[in-house]
Image (cartoon, rainbow, N blue to C red):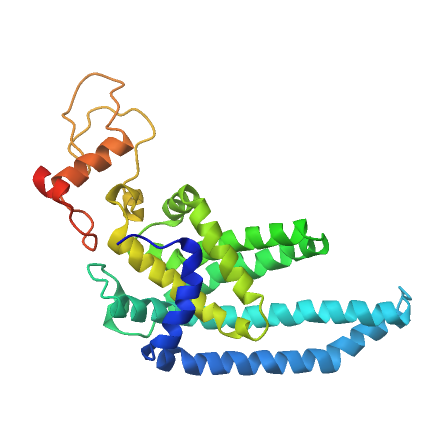
Length: 306
């Protein structure tokens, strides 16, 4: 088997959620709370903020025509509604992302990763805050900054979906990188080397979240899709293309008197200006000596090299 096309995982997330009732009991209560708060926010905004903004445009210092005041107020209220729903869904996902990844990894029988999620489904406060900050930065801030692009017909909307899609897909895999032990720069390196895959996933995920009514469910299914993608990477990614390779940081400058390291070996020398093994050479040496991917299948080629 091989990895599926990245753009298919948001759809696979929807199918997985509908066919695996084990997920329902974990996220249903939180989903109901999120929907309740979102509906209350929509009602309050249209009952109080919408008319107040229209009167402010018409009778205020700007003195817009009445029809234009109500139109502008309606468009601004829609943006405010979208922002409120996005904030509530972000708070929801910040807590439930750990749970979703844990349940999906269990169901898909992904083992060999030293993560706390397998000890229970209740995430730690630190993990929740970290996920919330990442999602807030990537989703809410980027949405507010790029929202004016939608005023440019066609081209602006395409650019808006592209920007939000790429960074949204990246944010959904921050939990996976955290499980592997990658820091921010290592995760960034992997994401940018696979930019097209993350763009394809993110564009479909953003488009699904733009569909009315369905966008109440797609934040959850997109996380499920990203978890399924991570499971397939663990199973089927080529060893040299696995994100765990980025835990082995290549040296950036010449070194002297190098001793044995855990990714290659060099004897101590007195000669200055000796470079360590290149990054690819170091990874190939590690692959040839041991299987460093506990969840990846061991190919016969690597077994012969042991």
